[in-house]
Amino acid sequence: MAVMRPHEEAECCEEHVVHTDAVSLARAAMPCEEITSAASDFFKAFSDKTRLRILTALVTEELCVCDIASLLGMSQSAISHQLRFLKQARLVKSRKNGKTVYYALCDDHIQIILAQGIAHVQEG
Image (cartoon, rainbow, N blue to C red; front, side, top):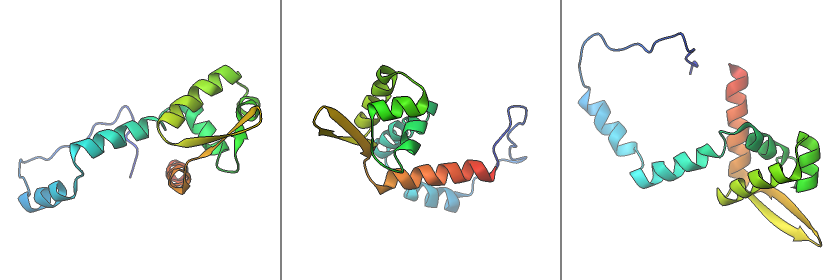
């Protein structure tokens, strides 16, 4: 799938013909509004560069806020804010060990989505 450049226009059909069989198949395969809304919120979590960098950092192993702040060259407060967002979106989970809170990806789905998204962009 090619990425549309800002100066390119989407092409339109030269004649108006609705392929009802194809539309029916597509309609049957589409998830309900509730699911697409939840999926939209899920993908919003990936739309911020800092959150994406945090997620990719957590692919290798769990890290604490101090680790992530050092890795990204940001304040602990800024990282903590993004981690809170990612936790609410159920993309990361945390565990406390003494006074340190470690973060990790919630499950393998997150790692797969990250890998596929990055591979797609690299194919460019």
